[in-house]
Length: 366
Image (tube, rainbow, N blue to C red; front, side, top):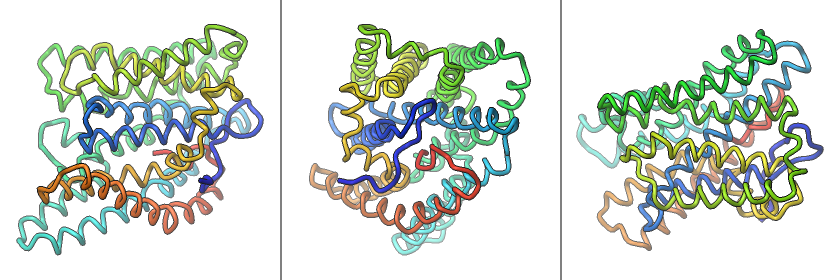
């Protein structure tokens, strides 16, 4: 199946690299399988963290290159691109969600409940309401990750500008320090008795996954990792080991296990970073060709819509009480219908407007 959009632009390489879209396709498929409670995928929620690392990397590379070309970063254009990319599709999903609930539930209390949840999602507060054990939103619970990313988009460009004013020798180490600080803070909170919801949903406790991608971007953009493709045996071995590690964690990880927050997330960050590095450095390698498989690239193009729609669809299918294998296939099909409509009616048309404010290689990313 032919990709519905141009593949992701690649820094320091000629042409494009659809394999990064393929990674995104795999990640969103993992998340769907987890939320659909498919046996054997109890840890595939780490697909969200693969998104985080990839998003942190691509956003940072683009900002660094803009700074190199123009000597500055246009915050206005950056925020306009992010709003045009993310907000309209989210708004469409929330409008349909509210209309559905208005007719599905007859009582006024339910209408107010779902309206409140929609506002939590719309204003990107869902991760904090969940982090502080408020149990909201429920049907829109997956919006916690959208909230966390939006908070990253709001803070990171400003912080990046401050970092870029420092000596180059200090920049990457400072990003590494921020990564370690977030990781250490999460472990400390967990040891102090913080709830699973607090350490899983808080921006401060999950920023390390995004910062891992930011650190990779600094090293890559500075040319410090160009030797990767020349390492004949280590590069393919490390890439394969990274895929195996991610696959093992997708099967075995638990979001209510201390090991996840203490060291398993660090493995996810490292493995995802090595995978991205390998796909960038060895475009003709077998792994790159596998992730460039057109159905995966196509899923990657639609991944934002799939992520927006899959959780409410699964929730209401399960609410009917008929939650068998066939119902899961039906939910997958309906998710794809909504995602395609979102892509063709909202996301793709607005991407043309967004590009007027500067091209963004992450135009289709969460």
